Amino acid sequence: MKKPCIEADLVLTLIPFLESTDQEMLLHAGRAIGRICYDNRDLQEELVKVGVIPSLVRILTDHEESEPLVHVDLLALCNLADLDTAKEALSKTKVAEQLVKQLRRAENHERLEIIFEILQALAENDALKVQLVEAGVQEVLSDILLRLQGSSQAEGTCIVKATSDLIVSLLLGDGNCVRMVQVGVIHQLLDLLEKHVESEDISVQHAALCALRNLAIPVVNKVQMLEEGVAERIQALLRSEMPPVQFKLLGTLRMLADGQADAAEILGQDPMLLNRLVQWCDVNDDTDICGEANRLLASILRHNRSQEVVKAVQEAQGVKHLVSMTMSENAAIQNEALNALAIASTIDLETLEDPFKELQLVQSLHKLLQDDNTSAEVKYNSMGLLCSLLNSGRLRQEIEDNKIKETLEQLCSHSNADVVKEALITLQILKGEPPY
Image 1 (cartoon, rainbow, N blue to C red):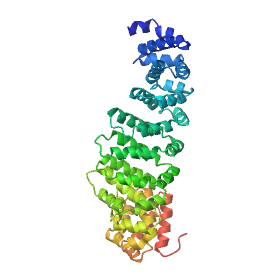
Image 2 (image 1 turned 90 degrees about the horizontal axis):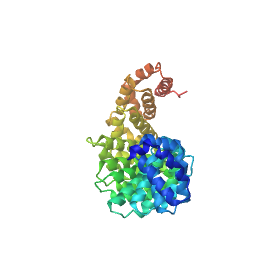
Image 3 (image 1 turned 120 degrees about the vertical axis):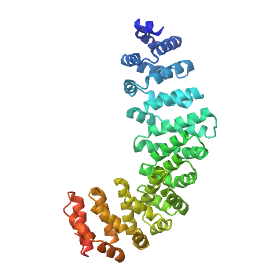
Image 4 (image 1 turned 30 degrees about the vertical axis):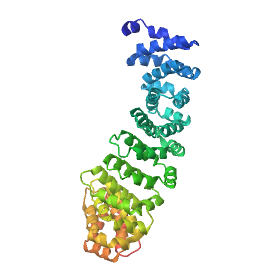
């Protein structure tokens, strides 16, 4: 029956009835339009073009107490929300306020699922994303997580996952992330993880971990999360033996340590964490976890300002992994390791002198400087580390014995200006002259 209805232009005839003040008329007109247009993208686009969106938002606003009308209206929005034209039209209405209101009122799983489906689609639009956060969606999501914390039913788990997924989708810009942390979402996500950490279904964990990692990016959030003991709670969750969970948790800790000396000091003086990291650095059958563990070790040293941390990382046998990182095929990884070792050398070269000699760090740096395939940034950072090593008499001797001076002289004619400048400075220090 859909085809003859479409051919007779019945949909366009029905649309004016959406302006009625009669609830029965609205209900039946809405159902008829929804059924005729279901799964017909061209007709749905036509609906948006003739202005159905403002009518749907008005119905939701004027008849929020009418369950049948709200249900039909939400189904219509759900069917249209994937269209870019619909999102654009919705961004010019107050749909965010109405959806947040309906989300707060929703009591059954079916209603929650419909609203979440709409919200996920709308969260793909930057303007609507901001409007949803301004309407307070994060507080409602936080309440839902709190309410369903103890739920072991499949439906409850489904909503918890949808909530976590939506939090990830809404994390646009520092402002939204900060609001999420301020309303306590972070601890509800951690409660959720603690409950599901041993579960074989990792979908909830994955969503919660993605949200956690993104929340740890803004600087103001890092400070608050550290003050509230989030780092310690994440470390406790590392008992999980599930690689995807371990990988995401390590990434979150790395985000927390990024640019935060306090966080680096807390993590860098935890012997259990350091020993676990070093174990993961040796894991060859999971390159993701191995790489993330190495990067967290480098981040701890790079952002740290304490001799105690340098000593702790060395005692845990972590320095050898950082030296190995300098020879990685990935330039970003190499630079992280080189910078970490340079800072650690500046803080406490005496502790690192012996391991550097045993691990043949000077020889590794020489290879990087000689290799034409080494990126300019890696060469630059390798020379920065060499400058730190020259403060040790024994390592200076090793640098001289390896004839690195000749390589540095060749780099003075390198095509990259920064490399040339650093080569000249390193040569000056090597000759015992003050750098200019």
